[in-house]
Amino acid sequence: MNNLPTTSDSILSCARALIIAGGYNGFSYADIADVVGIRKASIHHHFPSKVDLVRTLVARYREEAEAGLRNIELQVADPLEQLRIYVGYWEACIADASAPLCICALLAGQLPVLPEEVGLEVRAHFRFLSGWLTSVLERGARNGQLQLASSPRAEAEAFMATIHGAMLSARAYDDPKIFGVVTGPLLERLTFAHS
Amino acid sequence: MNNLPTTSDSILSCARALIIAGGYNGFSYADIADVVGIRKASIHHHFPSKVDLVRTLVARYREEAEAGLRNIELQVADPLEQLRIYVGYWEACIADASAPLCICALLAGQLPVLPEEVGLEVRAHFRFLSGWLTSVLERGARNGQLQLASSPRAEAEAFMATIHGAMLSARAYDDPKIFGVVTGPLLERLTFAHS
DNA sequence: TACAGTCTACCTTCTAGTAGGTAGAATGTC
DNA sequence: GACATTCTACCTACTAGAAGGTAGACTGTA
Image 1 (tube, rainbow over the protein chains, first blue to last red):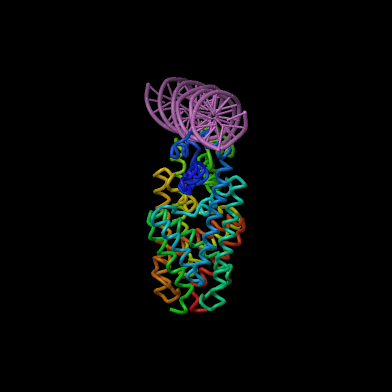
Image 2 (cartoon, rainbow over the protein chains, first blue to last red):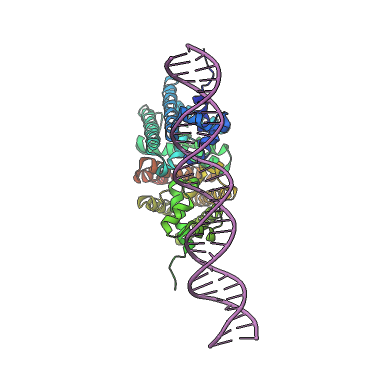
C-alpha cells in the first residue's frame, strides 16, 4: 500500500492548480518548482517540455472526467439524478474552491495559442462531455422523465454551455453561489412539466 | 474629416485581436510591434505599461458594449426583439470571425492572474451586461411577452452564462454554427408559451 | 554497476520596460 | 517674419529578469 504521491504526481497537481488560475501561459516551470520544492531542471526530468506536461495533465483530467461520468451511470440509473450528480459535483468544487473551473473550458478560450497536442485534448473533452450529456438527455426523454424543447444534441450543447458560462460568472462575481443560481433552474426546466 | 486611425488606435485594435486569441499573457509588445509596423519602444510611448494598454482596451470595449446595448433600446422597444438583436450581433461576429469571443468572458477565465485594474473592468462588464439583460427580461415578463421560469435576475444570469459558454463551444468545435444551435432554443424557450 | 531522481550551472530567447536621442510640427515671444 | 521652445511620435540601443530548456555531476537504492 503506497498512497504517497510521486513527484510527478505533485508536479501534475500543482500545474493543474496553476493552470486553473491562469491558463497555459499563466504559469511557468519556476512557479511549479517553488511550490513542489524541487528545481526547474528536475521537472524537465519528469516532463521534458511544457507541452508534455500540459498534454499529460489534460489527458489525465480527461480520463478522470470520463471515469467520473461513467461512474455516475453505475451509481444511479435515473437520467435526471445523473445530471444532478454531475452539476452537484461542480457546485461542490466551486464552493470549496478546489477546482473553480473546468480546465478544458478555460483552455478552450485560449485554443488559438495552445500547442496543437493540447488543443486536441481540449476538443476531445468537449466532444466526450457533450456526447455523454446527449445520451443522458436522450434516455430521459425516451422514458418520459425529461421534457426537451429541442433535439437531445442541441439541449446537451446548451446544457454544457450554460455550465461553462456559469463557472466563468462565478469567477467574475467572485461568488460561488451564482453557479447554483444559474444551474438550479436549468435542471428544473427539464422536468417542469411534471412539477 | 479624418477617419484615418491613429497609431494608438491601431495598437489598441491589434492588441484586441491578439487578446481575443490568447488572453492577457498570450501576446507581447513585440507581437503588436510586428503587426502595426512600429518599434516596441513606440508602443510604450502611447501606453507606458502593458497594464495601461489592456486596461484602456477593456475600458473601451466596455464603453462600446454599453453604447451598443443602449442603442438597441433606442432602435426597438420590444424586449424579445432586443434580445434577438443582441444574440444576432454575436452570431455575426462569430460567423465572420471578426470577434469570436467576448473579451471579458475570455479574461474572466484568467482573473486570478490579471492585474487588478484589468480585473475590475472585466467584473464591471459582467455586472453591466447582466443588469441590462435583467431589465430587458423584466420588461418582457411585465408586458406578458416573455415567460420566465425563475426571477429576472436568475434568468439573466443563465442567459449570459449560456451565451458565454456557447462562444467557448464554438471555438472548441471550431464551428460557428454551434453558437446558433445553443442560442436559438434559448430565445424560443422564453416565448414558448405563445407558440 | 546501473539507473532514477535530483542537483548546480549554464544557455538562448523572450519579456516588459528604460535611456537617450532625432525629426518635425505646433506654439509661443520678440 | 524670425527665433527659441516645447511637444509628439517615433527611433536605436540597452537593461534586468523570466521563460523554456540542456549538460553533466552527484547520490541513494536495487
